[in-house]
Amino acid sequence: MSEVPFLAIVGGGITGPALALSLKKHHGISSTIYELQPKYDVRGVNITLAPNAVRVLQHVGVYDEVRKHGYTYEDLNLSNAKSQVLGTLCQGSPKHYNFACLRVHRAIVQKALLDEAAAQGIPVIFGKKLVGLREDNDAVELEFADGTTTKASFVVGADGVHSRVRDAIMHTKTGYSGFMGIIGMGIKRESLHESINKIALPNFVFGKKGFVALMPSSHDGTVVDFFSTMPYPTQSREEWNKLAKHKTEVQKILQERFGNEWPQFICDITRDLDKEGLILIPFYEVPPLNRWTSVQQRVILAGDSAHAFTPQGGQGAAMGLEDAETLSHTFSHPQFASDYKRLLTIWQDHRKDRLILVKNLADLSGRLRTPDSALVQFAKEWVMWANMKWTGPMGNMKWLNGYNAEDVLKLY
Image (tube, rainbow, N blue to C red; front, top):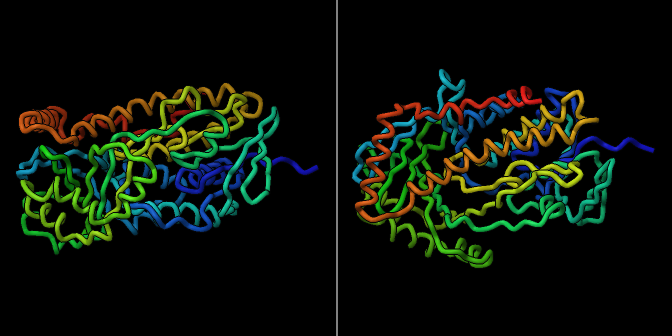
């Protein structure tokens, strides 16, 4: 009788391949990745990777490849709708955090991870839709829509906010966060109105009608993203899909919020940007889970399947990458086979404590981006300005950007 494989990973996005690579390269532990999509998923948008995310990419050997395709920066500038400076926040720093920030397309990160997994001999099986899990005291059986089954001693669900693994081990329901995002990519910086020269990029611009970000995304900084996150009424999944495809309506939403009373370069973008390139994304959240594992703890959730929340703190991918590396250290513990329940509980509690802090940061960022009356907006901008003056450019963010996954080993 053949030996049951140690680990099956469901989800070939970012968290799953990072976990597989960390296990293989640093601990010599093999795994297999099962991905729903039939091939590389080229969908998605540009994302920001803070130093705590970049650190994991460097540890698994893909940072140099990813960095070639994105924009590296250290300072994030904050301004208001009158182009008045509110402050500068050091988001990344080789001096303080060992790494700068990186703005890059999600698909590039995923492809680099999967390519490296293939180079390391890690099996990645595409087109595998999970339809069931059966767990006993010794192993987990996975059943796929194509009728095939496989077994593993442990299963990690890294299959996103609408996780099938999570649905198989507990009853939860994802909910709309109340926020959505609209992004336009591929804007030539030289095409923007000259008023862009009044502010430094990258820049978050705050006003009484909401929030706009201008983020360089090409390696040389000549191409920028325009995006905004904003409150929006609840829609059904079908209604969201319909709205996302109705590009004229998406552009209208931008023009109503940012078509006037903003710097001219912002007003022009809402009018002139090719509407067919606009991408609308509703933000769903996973409710706080009492546990990130099955009852018998042979199935573990990681990344968005365990804790998805709005990306307004710029930490969505980072939290999945941190989960991956800390979980790899947990799996490799010398006593894991005999003491896995205690070790996984320690890992889960450590990660949950950190996620509370990060979600609080994302929620605060969401409140600052929410439209308000002129008086309230003035107060918010004054608070941002005063906080930047008080904390300085580092912004008391070492707890976030300076995180080291290896520290989890001290808890065991």
